[in-house]
Structures are given as C-alpha cells and as structure tokens.
Image 1 (spheres, rainbow, N blue to C red):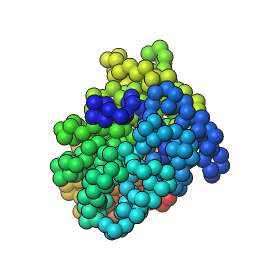
Image 2: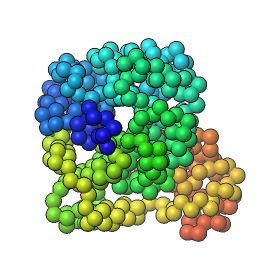
Image 3: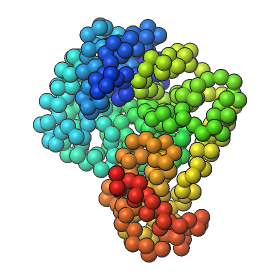
Image 4: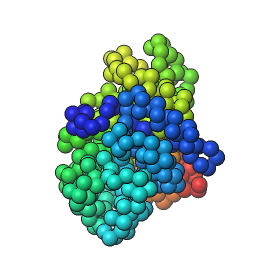
Amino acid sequence: MNKYFNEVKMNFGFGCMRLPMNGDAVDYDEFSKMTDTFIENGFNYFDTAHGYIDGKSEIAIRECLVKRYPREKYILTDKLTNDYFNTEQDIRPFFESQLKACGVDYFDFYLMHAMTAKYYPKYVACRAFETAIELKKEGKIKHIGMSFHDKAEVLDMILSEHPEIEVVQIQFNYADYDDPGIESFKCYQVCEKYNKPVIIMEPVKGGGLINLPDEAKEIFDKLGGGSYASYAIRYCASYPQVFMVLSGMGSMAMMEDNLSYMKEFKPFTEKEHQAVVKVRNILKHQDTIPCTACRYCTAGCPKQIPIPDLFACYNAKKQYKDWNSNFYYEIHTSGAGLASDCIKCGKCEHVCPQHLPIREYLEETAKTFETE
C-alpha cells in the first residue's frame, strides 16, 4: 500500500501510546536508543496523540526524535482528540500547540481521533474536517485521516460524507476479526470499498495475543518458529489494503522482536492462516458468554439494550483484560440501554436460539463495567 504514500518506508510503525518508562516519566535514553534502532533498520513512521501518556508522548517525540534527526528522516502522525476542543475556534490553537509540543512545522498525517457515532456530530458541527483541509492547503498537514472505533455502518457513513479522508486507522487483529462488538473485518471491508489505505492499531490486542492459553500456544509452536507477537503482527500486515501496522513497543526487547520479522516481511502462508483460525476458536470458547450475535434478542428488548454487543465487550474484558473493552462498552451504550437497565422481562431469553440465561449474564456484565 506504500504506493499511496511514497515517503513512508515499509509497513511497520512505532506507536507511541506505550513507551519505555522510568517511574512516571518516559525513559528518554531508552526511547532514543529504540528510535535509533528503528530508523537504522529502515523504518520511519511514528504515531502519537496529545493524550498519550498524559501528554508526555508528544514531548518525548520532540526530545528523542525531532531534536536528533532532520525532518525528512521520519514520518509523524498526530491526532485531533474530542476531549481537547469544543468549538471550531478551539481547533487551530490546539493544533498549533501540538506542533510546538512535537517541535515540528507540519504533521505528515493528522487524524480525527477515536471517531464514533457519538463523537462524529461534534467534529461536523465544529467543522473539524474543513479545518483540516485548510491546514493541508497551508502545508501544515500532508495527509488527512481518521482513527475509528465503532461499527462498520458508521464508518461507511463517514467515508461517504468525507471523501477528503485519505487513510483510516482501525482496531484490527485476528481475535477481533469477527467480534460483533468491534467488527474488525467488516470495517476493513468498508475501507476496501472506498479504497482507503488502512493503518492497524492494537494488532496484538494490548498484549492479549502474546499471553495466550497453552492450547493456543501449542498450535503456533507447531509452525516451527516465531514469537506469538510475530503471528499477530504479520497476520495484520498480510492484508492487501493495509499500509501500516502500529506496535506500541515499551522496551528494546519488544523492538528487536518486532524488527526481526518486519524488516524482511513475509506474508502469511495458508498454513499460518489455518493456525490462526484454530487459535481464534480456542479464544472464543474461554470461559465466556457463548453468544452467537444472532440479535434475535434485541428487537423486543423494551430497554433497547444492545445485548450481543455488551456480551462481546464482556468476553473481551475477561479474555484480554484490555482497556478497549470499557471503551467499546461506552460506545455501544451511548443512546442505548445499559446492562443494568434490564427489567428482567425475559423476552430475550424466550427468543434466544442458544437458550442462554441472558438476564443473569446482563447482571454479570453490569458488575464488570458499571461498578469500576
């Protein structure tokens, strides 16, 4: 996919949401060494956002990358996050503060951050897309994009209304591939439909696809080599519409492992795809709610609870313990019912083909997400 952005080298990016730390501070010495190793191996794409590491990520980029390398040596992506603007007039000053924090005159990519159906109207009302177009004309942005966390139909709507979006960043990994709460592959297919290059975030699902159950590890071990992270990252990078896979590397060991298979990248083989399907099935059946997402239960729910989506969040939380589960729970309950809104009418259980005790599962889901 690099034919779209010739300045980007290779298909592997340094995600700076997770960096080496020394207590509460970014370890600049270690980050500098990792940056050097990354660039020496032919890579140049760095991704940050203002909220990453409580604002420390952008500053670390300035100190460990920008001050140490000429601007043409690296590609830098930053983002416009919902929390940092409330009006159209807020956007430019915030953008300028990001340029200053990073120590650059322009961003190669600037993304509308963590877009959902809930946040999209605010970006529209504040003319965020139009402002990005103006900044691009001024040379302060090279490419306009969007990072996205919602259902495929929402992504389709946004891309149909904003053809200026050049690239889309989605959560995608082999576990979320057909997850009804995330719809990774469906979102990927929407990007294909609009011919938008795809940036992958969370390829190892916050580390969840490294800490696999023994049964799953055995399947990969039989392939004869490669870390568990390697299968997760190479899986994502093997999709033709994918132009960049991000990895949040918190140590030199992680960096070296990632580079060992991404420098001389080899696409997934059929045998590896078959292994991933087996691993995915194992993960699906780990002490979780066996919901098939047929959605028979949702039509008659008097409280409009998106039951399958909330169960998908519950399963992901139990399996991977990642922060995204809470984020998606908020997405799915925005404008809909919470798990705790269940009035125990039983209509859902009456139509459930799996005969699940849905009311009990909703209670457990509410305890998991609404009492933290």
